[in-house]
Image: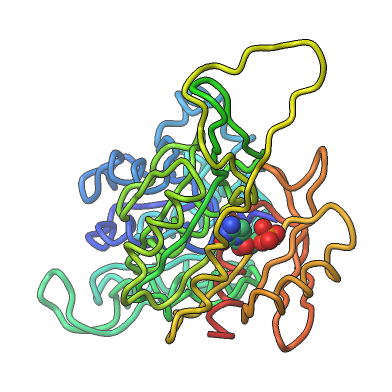
Length: 395
Ligand code: C5P
């Protein structure tokens, strides 16, 4: 299940930290929509938050139904958690009074999602009796708080009032959602991922391929990138938009994928082979279009090189994770495959006519020497951080 966080941003100087808050949440597979107070736009631009959340940023109650047809009630229903960071004294006062005089406060009233506030203000403001009374009142109604922290403030004062750091806010929120901790171990790691299908040409017009869409490999790559890894993504032909902020290498055939992997494998820490590499190819591509004739057509195909096996045959292979798509006896077949290929971890995935490819929930199991660990069905985007967590625990 994908978790959905509505991030409310009010007008504190620490609003400049909210783009990294959004990125950290998204790296965990959490969907984030941002709602700002009008004044918050003085501290961070809606465009920055739109770019990192990949969603329109809203602030006006009266135009909230324009983008994506989401009015404020629909957005209130959408959220399974509301986080307000930074939460100013003014915003706390308006929440305490039950006001609904802008989009953010209206959403808070209209939603039954748990509310987490990260206050940020000058230390005298925080100590003010009115603010403290609002804090007590909100807490008594079940609103959770993180911070404020003590330290140097933007205004030059030193004291209680700094917004908690994005990492700490995300960690608390993830714990509340039952999600794994931030994927800190990926920071600075070199990660190579293969994704998508390969295409094996038969003649200048036709090729052999499969139904892989690259969704899982791209989700793993984006997640590792957002968690601070240096990512190389070697992708077969897919309809997905190329990812930014990582080294994208586009290939077509199994042979070109093999060559690209070995061009980039030096000094990699972790390799994830999520690509559905063709097992067979035509030894020589016909230079002219194959003409139809009476009777059957026989083509003689030869085996492609197994990239995973070649990696595991290296003297000091990087930690390598394979994927296994099977239609029948998924676990038995996949465990045999894991042993045959010498892989420490293999992610087994049930595929069929209507499952396993593209978007939609998938049910996977993590196979390793520790046994079989089935994971709950989830979208590939939501699975990516969970899979990284499992891989990091075993690497
Ligand atoms: O043998 P099978 O194709 O089912 O194994 C799947 C795993 O092996 C995947 O991780 C896939 O990326 C990898 N593979 C490979 N090179 C091949 C075939 C599969 O790396 N030629």
